[in-house]
Amino acid sequence: MIKSAVTIALVPQIKSGPWIFWNDLEKSLEKAAALGFDAVELFTASADAIDPIHFGALLEKHQLQLAAVGTGAGKVLHGLTLTDPDATVRKKAISFISDMISFGAKFGAPAIIGSMQGNVLPNGNREETMAWLTDGLKILEKHEQEKGVFLIYEPLNRYETNLLNTLESAVDFLRKNNLENTKLLADLFHMNIEESDLSASIRDFGGYVGHVHFADSQRSPMGLGHTDMMPIADALRKIGYSGYVSAEAFPHPDPDAAAEQTIKAFRKYFG
Image (cartoon, rainbow, N blue to C red; front, side):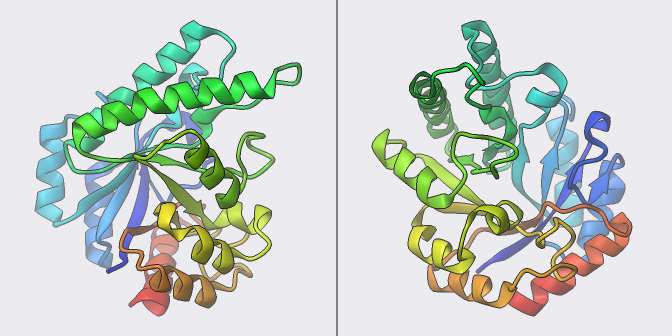
């Protein structure tokens, strides 16, 4: 069964980012539950920014699950990536993500590696950079396995990374490097830029998809852009996808309206 999730961001420095709810964790959970979401996807400044016991009690109170945890604050706040030329920075990036993995695992939720994957720098060596990425993911995979969850890698569009931009390229990379505990995030906004046929990519590489970001063509809540969502929903059902479809979208025109639009769209395509 495909499940719904909505994003909550608690990092003031990323206030302009594509997240639905902001700042007030308990109020956001209350609103998500009232609208009928199954889960939330959480973005925090660090793994210790929230008391896990208190957070667990809030999830239980509102009968919600934790779908995933984002790690982007590692780059935004600290400039950390898995492909930085400085080995000390890469080590700190691995440590930051490992801590987020440990936090999410308390609730059975995986951690997402998006912006913290980094880039091949203008004068950098691509082969060396991809080796750094591989080494980091292998260390993180081991930590994920120990915690009983999987890792999520997100192919981003060309304007955000020059590493891996499509599901196909990411699958090739995972296969080549025997990364067996890493799944992919099919972000419909990024895919709208990079994939020639979104539904075909999902059908072809769906066995590797572990999470979906639900946003329209211009990263608005689904239904406010020009994404043809029905064939994508059909493709997800055909591959037997049973994970979360999570709203990583701009809170337009405001968080409450964006959340309402998202759950309306979710029910249209998956309900």
